[in-house]
Length: 252
Image (tube, rainbow, N blue to C red; front, side, top):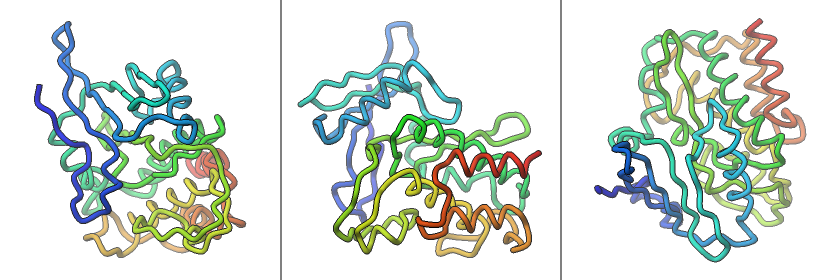
């Protein structure tokens, strides 16, 4: 059994090392991913276990669904997932952009990708949870016939909505700027902003590298959806379901 770390970002704060993952050899000859949290399950983070129990029984096509979990208060959270190649995990930061560079996708592809992500988050929001860590690094992309299939994962920050009184400095650009001033409710709009940022980052100049496609025309309806998602929390979509409905209208 060859173990490996899911996270290996030495330049980031140490508290981002939240889990360790190993390849698990099953008795039937198949393999799974065995993920053990570095934190212990408590009343403060029990929402993660509540959501995973639901997802285990009710898998979503755009969420990485566990095959099994072991969630006991006071113990590390254990999650077992379908096997994913170690090389894919080790280069996860690039997976979201790989295959969508150099004009290989158009606006209709972008709408389809955002529909997949909003569908995944809608299921989370309808259960009363906030993912709270929607980032390109937490999205797998794989070819599926003539489209790209997206899978959102990493539920270590998932929680119920709460009020953030203090300002919270963060290097994660997908988090809304209101978090840096405090006195803000962290709810479904938190994830919506992240989706807006991801869409913006894919279609506008950034600090990363070349754009996957041409910059969105401000007159394009998708630009309006992106702008509303990235608007101040008082003006953005209430949740991913509302954003998904507007995207469905564009795709019709």
